[in-house]
Image (cartoon, rainbow, N blue to C red; front, side):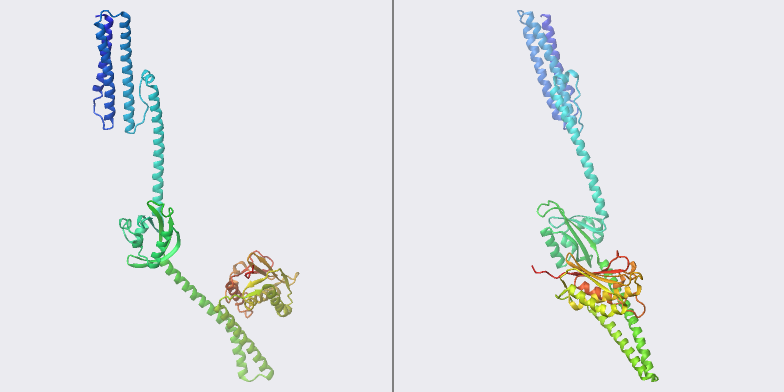
Length: 508
């Protein structure tokens, strides 16, 4: 046989042997994920071995042909060598690619490990795989970060849920409880496993009105804010405060539908009622003390002069003077009782309207003609067009007269000597209110007394100077018609009381 034929036959045989040996070397233990990949590698390498065997058979046949040219024989030798080399390189490249794929299946993404000349042969495929593995690694890293963030947010929300002071129930679209916090266990005196899955209305045990309220709220998707209802908890009737918030519109929710926050306000309501009752008793005691104090002075005067009359030692003129004093003090007692009854009755506001400026002029003229002239205090008017206000003229006249009389007395007693006593009454319109200001240049009102001056029987005048009911009665009248009466805290150089009265409905 020609030597070239022998070399060619040897190369072909070596290629076939290498291809056939690869499956044997790859026959070790394999995971379920690696099994299909190794089977594919064996099929590829077996195909390469068959190709090498075919080349070897062709060389053997040619070697039997003595008439074959040397040039053809050399070409076949080169072809066989090149085929064997390419087969080995291609097989190793595919083997490395399959190994990388097997590693990726178990979560390890890495570039394909091949030699430079194998990468040159399978370059596009290997580069595409390496690029895909890098993209997947980046994607998995982002997914892992997102997962850690979601877990952190879930833990944070769980901590908030458990730390809330009220019982929290997460309710599904079927009105069954899907989650709850520890406070819910304490409120219902039930374990978490007994709360989750229970129908909400059965768990609460509300009365008919509460059940209808909750069904309407869930049916319409209407939130609830600080709504109170009665419920039966652990065989005890309790008062609950409900706050309901929906996660999505009705019909769109797939699992959790709403969060219901419950607070047991039974004890708080009981305490509030007790506090209110205590405040009423305290107010009643203060009023009784104020009435006794106010009536004690004139009654003492009446008793004193009555005793002088009964002794019979006074002359006719003195007896007449004693009688007039008794009459005046008796009228003072009647006025105190009348003012107290007017303050206590608080009659409902009627639909009367009053021309405000006309009433202001009339009231100021009456005070100026009596108190103003006697004390030497002028009353100035600075009126703007206001129109009619709500309230009866008789009730509002009591308010205006009280304000102007107090201002005249304060200015007369403590006015600045260089300026002289002065009272100004002004009116204007602000929005939906008519505003009347009564200003004097007296000593003013101390900051800590600005709210007390509207309390019954509170007065800054000396003993016997007033009943302390004028401003309290005025404040009650103004409040009933929807207005406001305050002392201006920003005014300096005296006192300024500000009266807001709602304007009457204007015809279109």
